[in-house]
Length: 230
Image 1 (tube, rainbow, N blue to C red):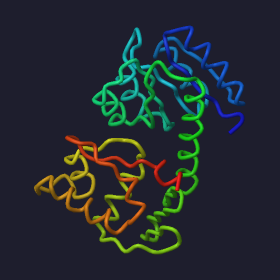
Image 2 (cartoon, helix red, strand yellow; image 1 turned 180 degrees about the horizontal axis):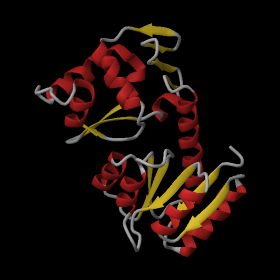
Image 3 (tube, rainbow, N blue to C red; image 1 turned 45 degrees about the vertical axis):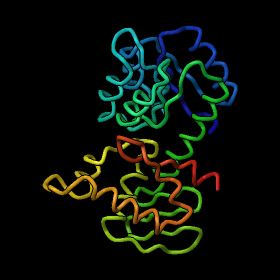
Image 4 (cartoon, helix red, strand yellow; image 1 turned 60 degrees about the horizontal axis):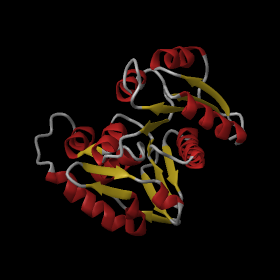
C-alpha cells in the first residue's frame, strides 16, 4: 500500500502532526487540512485514496461534509471523534463512513484501520460484480455464493439482502432502508420481513453468518473482519 495518499481533516494541529508522522512512516503520502473547505479543495485537485475525517470541525461537522462529498467522490472514509456514544458511531456509519475511531486513540490503531479499510476497498473495486471477504465469495454477475469452497443456495431476496449489506461493510442499515433497497420503494410489508430473511440467511451461511451483526434497536451491519480473521 506504499504510495497511497491519505487526506486528514482535523482542526487540532497536534493530532494532524502525530497522524502525519505515523502514517508517513508506514509509506503513505499524507496531506492535511484544518477545515472542510480546504479539504474539499484538495479533493477537487488531487487524487486521494482515503479520508481521515474529524467530526467536530469549525466550519461544518464531519457528518455534513461526508454527506456533501459522498455523491462526488468515491473513496473510503474513517471518522475520528471525541464522542464515544453508540448512537454517534451508528450515525457516522449510516452516512457512509467505512470506520469510526474514538478519541483518544493510538496512532498505530489508526494506521492499522487505514490498512484494513484500504484492503477491503481495493478488493471490492477490482471486480465490481464480485465481493470476497476471507473464505466468503459473493458473485453477483453469476448469482452464486461460495463459502470455504462450497456453494450456498440462497433465494433471490436473501442474495440481494446479503449483497446490499456486504457492499457497505460496517454501515448500519435500518430495517426500513433494507426494505426499500431489497424489496423496492412500493413494498408495504412489515419491517419484520427483514428479520425473517436475516434469520434464514444466517442459518444458510453457517460460520460466515458471524459477519451479519444485529445493531439492537436499529437494524443490521456487515462486519468483514469477522470473516477475514477466520
